[in-house]
Amino acid sequence: MSKNKINLLSHEGFEYTVLGRVVSWSLNVGRVIVIMTEFVVVSAFLSRFWFDRQLTDLNEKLQEQTLILKSYASFEQEFNLARTKLEHFTEVIGNSRPMEKDVQKILGATPGNIALSQVSADNTAIQISGFASFEGAVDGFINKLSSLNIGEVELSNLAVSPDEQLGIRFTIVIGLPEKKI
Image (cartoon, rainbow, N blue to C red; front, side, top):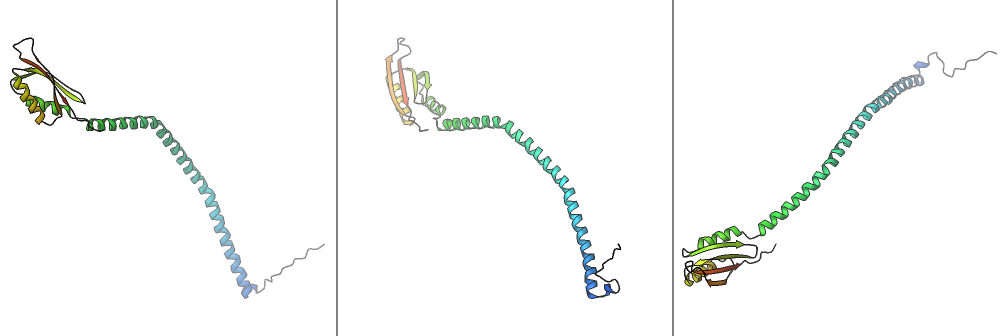
């Protein structure tokens, strides 16, 4: 049995015909397109390894940063709690009465014929105990304290001292106005 070759394209002068030129051009362009496509596919395949490595590195960094953030979580909670307490403390101190200034005013207003034995203060009142040489000195001291506008001045105790050399023993209470917090 002999094999007959069937050739649909004749070789003689075919490349010089219009159809021959189109077929030749198509084959050459097709080869270039196939080569370019293969180059793109091989480049994509090889770049996949580079992108996988970058992705792995980024995931490792993300895990490290997450662990670091988690380790600082308890510190952040303690810090925020301390900051809240400090803000509250600052607010309370800022809204409280400046007792030291009031006590300084009282000491500055004390006349020479009065000797103070005790000055105590809290958020509601200042209590002053002392001795005066005569009753008029206590009255003048009360009037002077009233003019300072610290608070409501009240004489709570007035008695003759057991030791007559000390004079009259007195206790004055200055009620401080309430500050709203």
